Length: 425
Image 1 (spheres, rainbow, N blue to C red):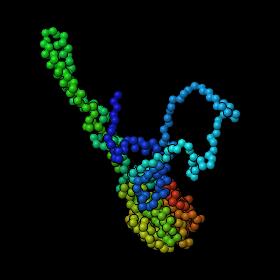
Image 2: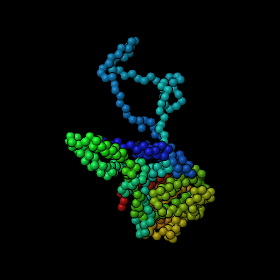
Image 3: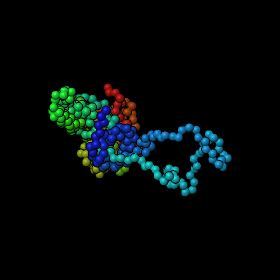
Image 4: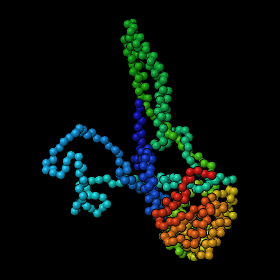
């Protein structure tokens, strides 16, 4: 049996093979840590890597030791309270033994902290968006949204250590050694046979036998110099990104920036939209995003203005819905585009405008969109806009309404809306 050991150094002297094995083994703990970390991040650094901590008990390995075996008896002088088989309780902490931390005091003077390591930006986003997708995405007449999926594509001579194919590398090594040594082995076998015959023949001079042995030794040394493994033998599994047939889509992001939306509420809305923007840009290439900000008037803006503009005013939600319908009619034919929309608001709206929002959604928007998400960010009781939308949600399965109370609800709500479906129509 041959042992194949790769001692090449990866980045920062870390093993890529061990790292990928570790990420697979503790995937559930890492996903929980990442989702918790998302809620603590600011809007500006949501796309960077993350330090992940895993409790020590979750990664501890079982160990076995050789015990003394057999039955043992010990006599403890002064015992008048216990008999054989009694279980002795741990004494409670007393006095200065109890510290201010969450755990109990220890007299051993040492312990184990949580295991902490750094995951990269790509690993971080892969975990966040792993099992999410756009709901009800269907193929249209002109498909230009490109999803990519990794497929095996044979083998290559260049790659990273984690993709080494051991079997193919050993096969290549064997073929090289056979090709380089076959001629020498044939010659060696012939010389060994001749040496046996000459040693049994008294008429052969001793000098000829010595010369024959020198030739045999030279060939044996030449065969030993053929390396067992060479850089040319190492083969890597090759993976290529194949585009998956999909359909072009546009996502409308409608955000309320009226005066009732305080800075904390706006930050929660921005966090939701930033997650959505990262999700679309990472998983669906060439998907278009239309940003609409509204107070009493709605305006289509670019990405920077959508997230960072300070403009504010009153609240008329129907202005954003009407602008969205107008843009769809002008630029996005329904036979060529999957229409999606996500709306965030604190629920405040001019009372006479909420019935108009119901009519626009019922007649113009919900019949043409693949999915519409409404997120209401409020700790108060819901108002007229929520009640109108709730009635619509009962009639349209492609309409989802969710309530977010604080920033910790953003990621669970986002995942619930875009959770990958088990089956497609």
